[in-house]
Image (cartoon, rainbow, N blue to C red):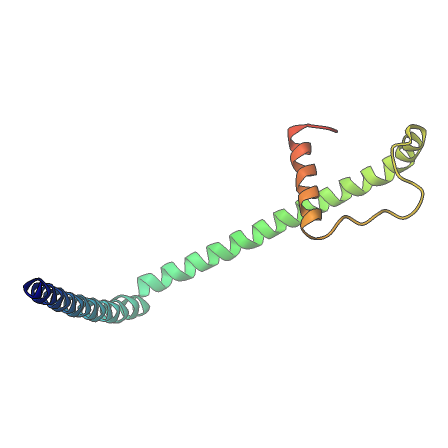
Length: 144
């Protein structure tokens, strides 16, 4: 029994030593990786960035690219604004042209709630799930 306990202690000591050596080795590797990362960052900063900043060709490329992107942004903004104006005008025409006929047809059908102000939607998690369910049913065409 004593021999077995002595061997167990020796085994546990050997495992602890190996574990310590492994952690030291891992720490050394991590420190070396950090060193190489710092060297790579320095080289990239000094050579690439400063080299490109002093390059006339790169400066011309950067100016042309910037001008092209600004032009694209301006053009796309104008196109989006004109499309939004068209949609707004169409919506306004549709709203005003169908409001009188929609009022007559809905009054005859009795499908709209007209006895007071509209009820606000439910809030919180219950409201979310109710609205989510309505959207899913609408997308799937269930229970119009």
